[in-house]
Image (cartoon, rainbow, N blue to C red):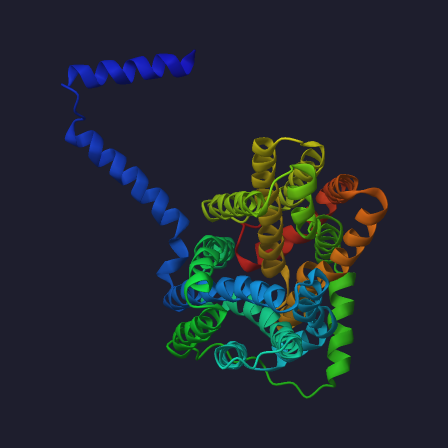
Length: 452
């Protein structure tokens, strides 16, 4: 009723002004939108982050192009779903194995130079794939070997890149916005990259996708080399590497906020995120659709994730993320349970958007909270545990989900994963008052909040 009254008033206003808005109204509307735009993109005022953001916008499109082209190439060469899984496992499992040790090197080495190295090695991997495909000499063992190589590079790149973000942001209150914008461009690239890859594969083949991805790394490397990196060098260390790894593990799991965040992330990744590997079967056997059905479902999840990224970017403060972490995990779990019960395509699309929103907000909020409470000399190691919790657990969860689905069915497996996420969220929520009492002094010391 209230909305109808507002609409009537708006119509009367337009009629009284001959169907036109007064120029002052346009000015106020423009100022309002400008303020919202400025709030969402406020971290772009930092030169280093602006360069990083621009480079990532280009490179991530290439990354998504390569992922789609690689899957298509493997299936075209082998007609094997099993080998599709093996290639995905080869790229992700090294992160589980090597990220903790790579986190030690991230804390010891210059993160700026390390990122230049990892981006150059990733470019080399993409260009090698391009040469092998374009010359017609590609074989499945090449793809698996190059996947393992890229997985090892990512094991170092991910904790280093996550640790590097905070060095580009002068006001730590804007860290949440920076991480949310990173998530936004990642999910924006999910729309552009696969679409371009589909067209290019049909017209010129997979090799050009790998070639363009290799070229796209030039944008990131150029952005990194253009930064002012004078304050990014870490303190020099002479201690034993394995001693530092043990020190990082003890720090992460003795400090309750970090421990609970990582455990909830690991649970969500292991039990909830593997729903993705079941989606082809869900689209075909439950919704009785085809490849286009799967495409729409995954696009809906991407749209939800993008909305989640924008929501976090529009938040003015990092305060309140402690409540958002279990809430978003619960939303993710509820979406999975709803999806497991949905026999209707349009309802499944809506639930996939909710799922995408929940997992993106959960991961980005956890990332932000970790980044703001961790000690800088242990940042690389903690972010390596973050990478293990999110990416490293995924291949293990996928194996579990595939096995479980064969025993109890697709929908029951998805529902079970959702229930586990909700249980984990409830446990985390019950610890919020304890975690808040630990985190508040840290925020006060860093000037994020005023001390009591």
